[in-house]
Length: 191
Image (cartoon, rainbow, N blue to C red; front, top):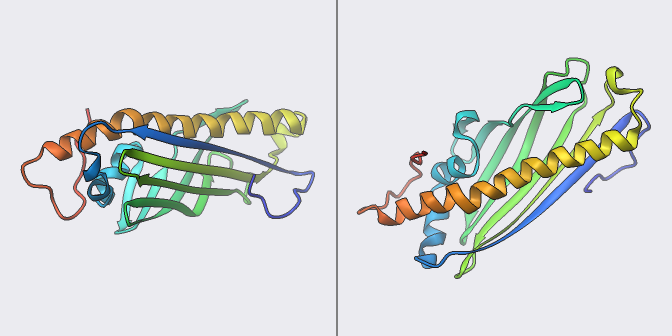
């Protein structure tokens, strides 16, 4: 868990990470060029209905609404994205939490990499959250809240990992089959 300082008794901290190693049997040599298609790749990795371009390299993403006990929350993050040498990196630079009006100190940290390695894709994502405990949840033991938080974060990362294995590879095959590959990122077709 990448928290830098001890957590006060009124704060919760939890984290999750996922690794990825995915073989790509056809056209793996074209993966570095595909990863340069920033918008296309992001729309295949994340739900494009919740993704908004701010400007090249900076995106707003509304994470899928999460139900935790009796609270419904939706993290909203600003993602900085860049590609270099066949590796796409995403990092959360700002975050907010919609749905918990009583929480003003929500901190979400995300760092993810996806790299072409000549045989396929390798990646890793780390997601951590630190937040004050809402009054509604103060009677629930801290260990239960943190275990639930870790489960939620793991679920988010597993969902993204599943999209890489299915949606991203499907979109990569469509991109390879195009007669002319665009130089800049173009919206991916989803379906």
